[in-house]
Every structure is written in structure tokens, then in C-alpha cells.
Length: 328
Image 1: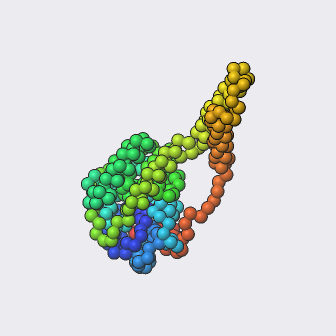
Image 2 (image 1 turned 60 degrees about the vertical axis):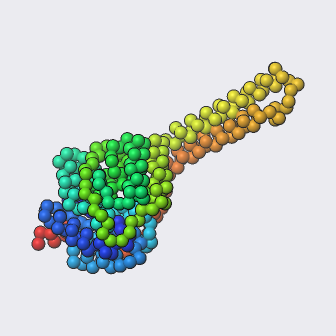
Image 3 (image 1 turned 180 degrees about the vertical axis):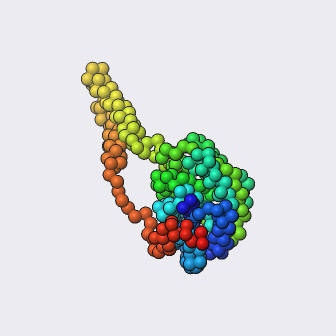
């Protein structure tokens, strides 16, 4: 199979039929063998029933249904895990991403050797104040901290080599920074293509002030993990040693001063330098222990369920079956 298309969704019943037919037409016109994996992230409308009906008439369509809303990152993680195509595309279900852009992005990977290609919605039809300005701020901060030269980290339309999505862990709100995760995993040839942005046709945007705050916190997390995730002792150990040396220096100064220069002066415990020394050494010891514990935790892999799949459709069908159906 040449392409897997991962589409996370939440309450998008109005757009699913149109989107699936749109994708089918594009793939048929370019002769691309494909699968569509819809991930229903806890929808409360009829989205899952529509996916079920579509899967009965279109064997290329598969579905994953979460027990409740776990977030876009968890939905993408589940889709990446189920994907079988040599290339993997992601897009949103709200008809704002144009599937006609996908073949050109695939060509950049197959012919030019890119590991992933991200869309750039140069002209957007979203609210300037609520979405466009925060997105520009996100993109500027992400470029500066990560070194990945993309204009639009938030664009949901992306195409990857399968090896890339199988090598990264997407959690929290990290779906915005998948290019950074890919770079940290060793996939450094990341391209960008200007894509057409469609105005929202149905429903309401899921973007809100909470995502603005979470996005910045996740950016800090991505930066921190990329710098010190593999060797936390390099940060916490160094800070701990520095704080301990500062505290020990104050303690040494107090001891020498009391023994040789001012033996009849105030008690050591009555001088503020004593508490600076004591606090610094305690904090230094704690930071050093934090680095040591971090190093130990890296050697222990904790398996934890990040989401609960309530139902799935067609995930056990082999890629060969899809090829045969397309040839008929």
C-alpha cells in the first residue's frame, strides 16, 4: 500500500461523507493505492455511524473509536500505530485541508528524498485575533527554539515516511510539534509546501484560549526534552553541584571568619550567610538527586494505557485485500 491517510475528528458528522468522496476522487485520479483511518476522538454526534456506513461501501476506510475524548495527539498516535502504507498523511476532518495537495507532497518525499513534508497555509481564512496571530507567535517561537525552519507548525496537512511516524511518540498537545519530534528522532530532511486553506464549511473551530496556553507549555517541554531528555544529570547534576559549591563556599567563609578573624562575634547561626549556605547545600543535594532519579527512570520503561479504544473497523484487513479491491 502506498499511502495511509490519518484523520482524527471530533463531532464532524456534516463533513465526513464529502471528505471521503473528495479523497477517493483525488486518489483515483492519481492511481494511488490508499487507506483512510478515521479516529473518532469521543464524538457525541453521529460521526461514528457515518464512518461505519462509509466503511461498508468503501473498503479503503477504516475506523478507530475512542471511549471518550483523549485529544488530537492520542488520536494521531493510534492512527500512526494502525497505518500500513509506505507513506502516511495526516489531515483534519473539517474540509479545511485540501487532499489535492497530497500527491505533490508525496512526490517531494519519493523523488527528492524528504523524510516529511509539512503544509504551509500561507493564506488563512480563520479569525485573525483568535487563531492567526496565536499561530504566528507559536510558529516563531517553535522556529527559534527547535531550529526547524517551517512557517506553519500547526498545519494539519503533513506527509511522512512510515518510518518517521513509527519512531516518534505523540502525547499531550505535541501534535503541533511533530516536525520537532521527527528532527529529534534523527529525521532531519523536513520540507514545506504552500497549500490551499479552505474556509470552515461546517461546525465550529476547536481552537480556544486553553490550547494557546497548552501549546506554549508543550513547546517548553519539547525544547527541554530535546536538550536534556536523554541525560537529565547533565542539567540537574550540574545545577546541583553549582548550588552545593555556593553553599559550601559560604559555610567555609563563616567557619574561617569565626575561628580566626572574629571568634567573639555573633554566633554562626545568627548570621544570614549561615542560612544561605544551608539552603544552597540542601537545594544542591536535591537537584543532584533529581538528576540521578531521572537517569534511573530512563532505564525503566513504564507501559501505560494512554487512551481506550471502544470500537474499530476494518483494522484487521490486510493491505493485499485493499489492492485487490482497487484493481477490480
